[in-house]
Image (cartoon, rainbow over the protein chains, first blue to last red):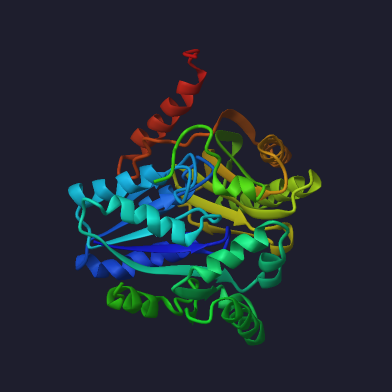
Length: 204
Length: 170
């Protein structure tokens, strides 16, 4: 059971990507995929939206899985392993979660389950790069999210000019020289196939 | 493993992020078609975001909504007034009732302020367009939401779950 997280700041397009990614990863039923969706607001709007697509979704509300409800997340991972046995679990943390802490929590759930960690895919919104990195208090959080990424997806590239995409890529490259950077448009489908391939091929 | 005691505040609180969610049933005497509902939902998202900023918010994480009707589902959201608001989804026919869930995540103001902005925005825009908020329930969603049930069954379940709020069980 490979656990892949789709992280990134609020409003960067995580849920839309989760919908597309889960469908492509499932490949018409060839692979068993489950989703774990975490929202701060206690109203699982995202989870309900994804459920409509027919996917197996576990909602975790009431706090953030990287800290407050980390043990609930770990238990959810174990329960999925025991009861559903998916080949892949896609995890959407809250927009303010720290990816390396989500990985730690997932590993706790894997103590009694055979799991491996897929890449931490972190989305970076091309429509508001300066707003994200320069935000009072939150800029540091976005920086940490980018630094924690195994793969950085510059999202919403269809909504901005090419130069703006390049500028976003340059900004995140400065923060994380090791991560692979991919361009993503959940609207047009750009980059989804590539992410599926990377998840399938990913080795810890 | 993180301690899940009540004293343990989430990482987001360190960054001044607050969230508020509410579910409600809205009704209108005249049937509402898809463009009407989409326009209203988009306006509502922007109104809430604007009110949050007026109350001192520094950043809109997201204001997002999910509107379920017997004719289909509409989603609408915004990440800030300057970014506009977007909606998607389809309705097969005009409806008089809709079940709305809103989730507002904002930085720079406390939860009480996010709550005030969310409720004011919802009531204000609904009122301007002739809708009445029949029932509302905070910090919840339609937990037993079953998208595979028949239209009649699912509307009945939504009613039942909102009805639970009215029971003086506390």
